[in-house]
Length: 381
Image (tube, rainbow, N blue to C red; front, side, top):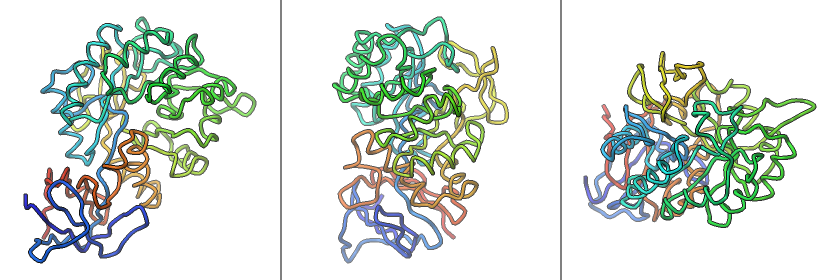
């Protein structure tokens, strides 16, 4: 890696707009604003340069689980997603015994502290049994604030988000507790009414966990949580854009109602992401992956995804025909802001980490840089 380089000729997506024939200047691990006379240039004509992707909801990849794998396994999963453009990643757990989750939080916090992960997200066990999805029902429990506090304390300041069915006993008090400790309270795997969802938002919830999935459908007399989550400016909605979890019309509805500033693309990936079909474990549950779709062996419920964010980006820009700036906002800037990391990542600006993705004209990934180092160096003819 050169200490300095300038990437030239590409269409560069900045917070202020798209710059044709733009340039990104890298010095060491940072983006800078001044080009010295001897700075080597990389010609990326015909390509896009966008900020590195930020995933706030991810359970694993490359055959490795963030919930149960060793440190080597977790790092393998992290590397897999980095090679698909995700330069900042939060590790998500699934429902388990409380003592196991607390122990796991302490283990994952060490990887956060050394810079491999951006934080921890607890998805379960505080979720509704009737909306459990790929979670073990016998391990579910009401969101007792004392138990929620146990998990965030075990994470030693690295807990970023907890998904809750806020209508359950203790749900609202748990939302308030999380807000007081600077941890995102996310509404998900919920059977809440419209009114109960509004109450949770007023208490401090700010994220909708994979909107539309694992919650009541939108109804004209009983609008349920979807309407409340879409209409409130305080809520960022997660979307899994893999063509399986959402119909394109549902994604379009979310963007139309919430706007690009309130959408965060996520993967909700499990072990098979970037790895292949086969039999896997998601927490204590067996999962079969066939043709890239993960389903529980027992019951057939969708069990996370095999999505990587480069595929989500390409689909959003081509199939969904979203403006590229909106896609970048949803896949980089918005999640970085949610995590409180926008001063370091999420956009291509001087002083920020040199995290970026190079895409060709068809939005296929061609290069990934993290902190000024090429993880995948563009092979240009």
